[in-house]
Image 1 (spheres, rainbow, N blue to C red):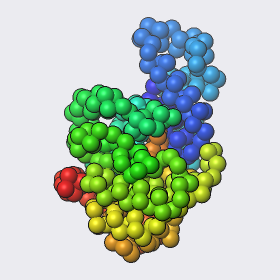
Image 2 (image 1 turned 135 degrees about the horizontal axis):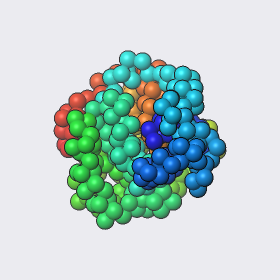
Image 3 (image 1 turned 90 degrees about the vertical axis):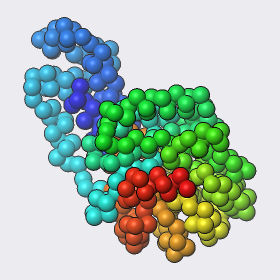
Length: 331
């Protein structure tokens, strides 16, 4: 049911509780599994709530859509959706280079994430599910990543002319090596390298770890560099300590972009470090780190931060045409 998925989209965009949002996505899955005869019977009797997993709110949406009208909940959500910022810089972004599907810890299938990206007008979109060490996020083993690459190949024609780029958010391990087979990383279009463990490592060790990760020739983007959380249902978390001048200089010298992570609970890097990376001469990537379709619109948040800090559009790699982007990443 398109209406249920659109409601989930707007609720994700508005940062509502993900468990409640999933009720709408799950209800859509339930209705889509029914055959035409079952839908006809339930529609005539308004018996949608007799289905396990369909509650009063989702049943109302289904009934209104079945009757040929736009559900009230969808009308309200669309009318109250706020502009997330970014202005002309947001409009200049051609794609998103960091997002997750339900292959790792995202809430939606690859096709649903890509359909949302296409609806936003993206020219390209990189799927970057987690790497194996992050077991809490169902990180992809080498074999699962190879399977995912096959799935992406099968989806390319469906979403053309938007380009689906292959990618990964690979963990930066304690010694600065990357958590995936090197030959697999070479096959991917975009590699986002991020620290997810031992965030309280002492500053000197963390600096060595990050410098090695961005200097090895395989990391295209340094993801959410400080690891901080400033709000949200996961609580808050302080910044990791490291020599930012050393890390950003290594990023500049080795062609690794610094991510401006658009998630409101991250706002990473902090403004002072964003300014430092700009002064050092780094390139940037404004990414959503989306884990649900509606979060793909978070680009506005990141674009506004870049705008406020005076980051030129030409230094943001996802304003570039796809051929220039891929040539840069491949180099």
